[in-house]
Length: 147
Image 1 (cartoon, rainbow, N blue to C red):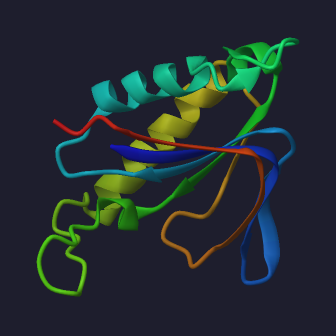
Image 2 (cartoon, one colour; image 1 turned 60 degrees about the horizontal axis):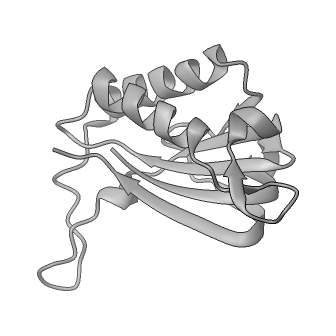
């Protein structure tokens, strides 16, 4: 799995002009699922993301995690994170999971976040989405736990 995490003041996702998911302060997580990924990778990433100390404490240092701040999480599926651009000019997506497998793991990931009590919003798997955000910082982190 590969994720891009952005600390946000707010974020929303629209499909066909209608807002389908939105959060206030928290994290926007763009999630790419690879062929070799499973629940173990999802569990590890959820644990890493919600405990990642990328929120400032009273002294302005990165010492607080999402669980401590009470922020929300907007999770958007994004298979293009698995793009292989090493050869040629057209990205290859052969490492991305098939849509049914990716959707299942995406839903599992979201369920794990919700089980922790985090206010969670999502996009629509497989849809063309318009994502808007106000990046706070800006703070952007890339995590990859592909084998």
